[in-house]
Image 1 (cartoon, rainbow, N blue to C red):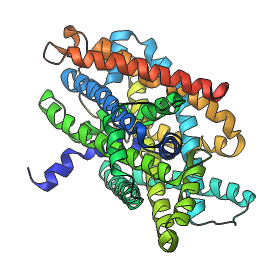
Image 2: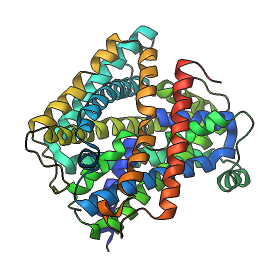
Image 3: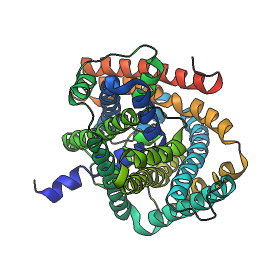
Length: 427
């Protein structure tokens, strides 16, 4: 296999990595590093591994049955799933859309202020940049199709990965402490909540479902492609884990940090400028460029992929539509359902950007997003746990079942902790 074939094989996995890492992930990993040091680096690796197992499970289902996981849930759990998930997806998309527009707006303002540097100008710039990036993402998706989307995402993830890793290396973390944090699982006193947040924050949530649509774009329709998909996913989550490790190292090296999301990322860039002295300005702008790449790739990935889910669900509502797992064709990105949701996710969240209290919206988002992964783990335990659905060869192995149960319990605890922290306050 030549280098071009290798790159093609790991394309969808890189899309998973690029979409799953945003401003919130940068901020969480940095805060954990600042508060707990390098002792919990192992949690990044474990979190990435658990997301790999979940994504491998939904991929195995799709390649073994010919149906997406959404179709499988409808066929095996009943058509009520369609309406429940449509309602969930609409709310999640509004909240995530507003959060991503806000994050890219704050990051872009830090790079190039349009209206000034005071608080009022920053709010204006956030809206202008947020809307502009949203419309740019729509243009890329509609005019360039999957191939242009893949190329842009590759550039974004390349920038954010290289910048984060080089910055972490330049900060010269203690090697012994680094490898000890990787190899010996332990949680410093008072660090349970932070560690759980780090475990749950690695990779995406709802967007993991979109990997199935991306591999269809690559023509992977049968079980003969399962090995390639496993390698692909492994590469994607290795990149995700390395990026997370780098951000923990950066947070640990900078000391005490405050804030959340993109505003914390901007604070990190400013602290890096102070830390590196004469080369500080270069490091600051490079880090902001990497942060922009991380946030824009998340926004572009959501804009391109989540309409797949809506279009798939919408087709299942049509009278006479078969949901027995017999369909293997890709969702039509020129369909009215796909285009309508793409335009909706790019425009409707502007309301949240300009007219909704962001703190209140963040609380609702925490509740909506936190419990998706444990639900996904439960569905995979049921669907992939029965030979009559996937066959003996592709049924969950005992070890996979154990990992899925562990992931479901862990992410359920992480979700409850996130909801508690948002609505009641950290314990």
